[in-house]
Each structure stands twice: as structure tokens, then as C-alpha cells.
Length: 40
Image (cartoon, one colour):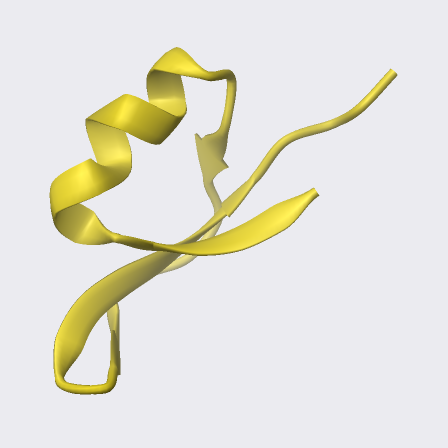
């Protein structure tokens, strides 16, 4: 599973098992990162 998360929410998504998969990029003027999680 993949998502574009705001950098301020990175810790929240990491607690849910997501891993950071990109450098910071801008989306709608807000810094984001790509985060991924493997589903079993």
C-alpha cells in the first residue's frame, strides 16, 4: 500500500507500520513524502 503523507504526519504513519520511501516533495504547496506498507 502506498500513500502521500504530509511530513508532519510521518511519525503517525510509522506507528501504523508504514516506511518512508522517498525524499520530501511538494504537493499543493505542502511538503509530502511517499510512504509504503507491505500487506500480508
